[in-house]
Length: 198
Length: 198
Image 1 (cartoon, one colour):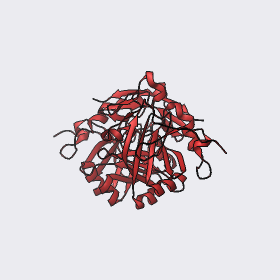
Image 2 (tube, chains in turn blue, green):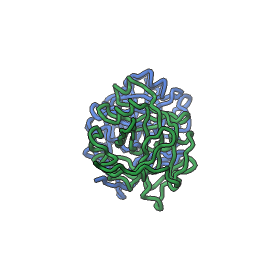
Image 3 (cartoon, helix red, strand yellow):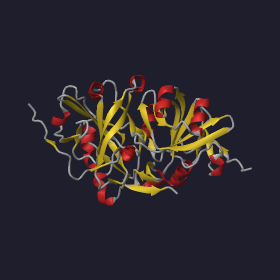
Image 4 (cartoon, chains in turn red, cyan):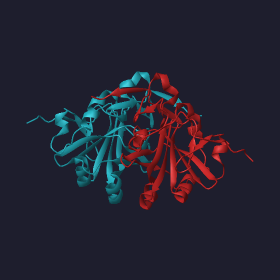
């Protein structure tokens, strides 16, 4: 039997993100890891397709194909988490998007360490730069027609080296912490510079 | 009376994008300009919140607040376009997100030149690096509950200097053509480097 990865307390470096700022975490279109858990079963997949739909309350839409194990666990539990992998996790992000977790524990397979989410107990992937726990807002029609799942954020946190006071800060000094934006085929764009509109 | 901006044919430099590749244009989470037209009335707004929901047929969701003039024209016409502004248009992108087009022609106000879309005749903003025309897929419940509008792409094109064969190519040589990803307050991240997951 594959040994279970270690479950750990929240990393002391993370800081809570006010719920009013939670939608900002995905405002710029990063690829996310969607994690789910029901009883002893848990899973993780990569999703390039998500977006905020509301700031207050913080609500987010994410596309999770109806054939996926994640969708099964999400609908059974009513909960899911979104974790934001940085550039340093590009390989892991690509790999967990390549196979289903229906027949394999991807946390064990890829030696992924996680932290139990403080509100819903969802697995938060170690090394990510932000994470949030969400309750599903059931929308059976659009879930069926467009694989689009809506959720409301109940807790969020981020690495203050790259997100603080409700804003991302990307610069050369924190390049390994920049978010990933999937272009296709495992190639990710990284937002390593910023411009200011005036 | 403010003179109307010039209407022009499609720029010769643009190349059609196969519909099977259209969703890739927004796969990485860029901020888009949403344009609408009904009769002689047209409008443009910036939207940070959009995502693909399907590759084939190419379908995209975008958040358009129900209070906006864009939403009025979109529902009346059943059509909308998404144009992708590059870094060189950061100021324009920020400005058209700051006021409603209900009482002002933003194309005239900001001296925006456009091209008539070849299928639906929607205004495609000059200087953008990609554009697509969409038909609304009416979903009254989620449009009301989450301001989320679904559309199916019927035509797409892109600047081959930065998008070709279904892929974005961001490098130092085309920095002015990189897409914008809104972080908040008019600050945009720009995907100026890429990493390859393995």
